[in-house]
Image 1 (cartoon, helix red, strand yellow):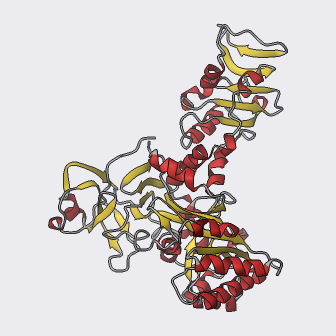
Image 2: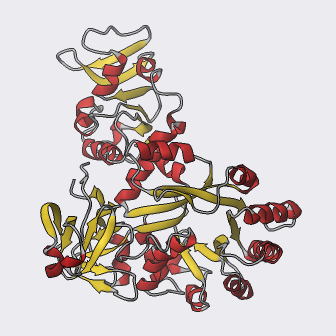
Image 3: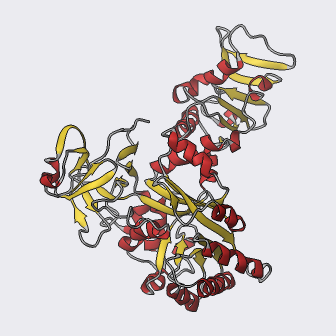
Length: 505
């Protein structure tokens, strides 16, 4: 995957004389939906030093190009702010690619394609592990060979078991790591499969499996820098430029390490468990503390539908809130939503007024009266349309009512529990039985989520002075039939003016 290192400029109209220097990158001939009421549409955007410096017509912004400016012709495609997923389990998303499932593969071609998809997101050097291949169901049914996958896995060692775990396939890089070549002898009770010239094919059987298997890193699924880098690469492919990580696993140091290494392509607001709020408080951390790529100051709790531990919850929420932290509590069902809002109301009354932005994660199946309480508290409903999208578009969340009440809504996915693709969430929100408009859904997935993390002044809309986090889509989701939105693809993703994903590369 190749990336532009320069700053990105999307052609939109603003006088050239208003800028001191030419833009670093320009995108022309774009169908821009800014999500900003003052200027909802434009043709182009100009970016310099990671920020949007002009929004307007192609003609006016094209004039901003200088000798070093990179230009992208959007060909009339839709450009919107980068998606901001308000509720993910980021490391778990990365670990979706820690094991490849080969059980449904029916041909050598499909076998290679599975690996090609993985290597698009994995860091170089990360092992590809997995199981399930069964060449008996292939056409033709010959055993796999390393040559089938070497071309698509040049930088990642591969070690995958067959369906009965009695054989395994290694690619050339894994064989090299293990020191297995033409001159290597078969171990006792093991076999290295070979071609007509005596070269290893990559298939190992019996005790030969351990010659490679023993070299697989023991911390494969907990190698957090690699796992998080994988998640970030995958996020970029879906147009997700920001996330709130609600997993409570406290990977702040690993995220900052990736940032220093230039490998983090996603802005992350990292939450930890509510019971550890004093850890942040003693460090002087408050809500949304950090830089524009990695921030913390969010604490999360999982609410159940009974009163057990309620006194401790009251104390923790009040303490975290008084320390200036942002509190998010998971609530699904009438009783949990009622309980969470009770706690929030008591805390707000005890600690006095401030811009605290309590978050109710899911806010699913809340009663109408509790939705009204949520609005009065100025709390955020952090919701996941695709997660609760049932057959025939059934959902018990009445989005029309929720938005009609003036609720602050932030959309997300709850990936890895469900699909990470924000276009599925938008599709669910605009085609369900309580559908809202595409405009409302996109705003909830951009500026709504930015507001939920105190960042609405920095991102979420395409306006001068905001971060250049942008997405180019294959189709105009505002004009196509709503049923087709789920099939729309991300063509290009830009974070801070840098192209971090292009589908054709």
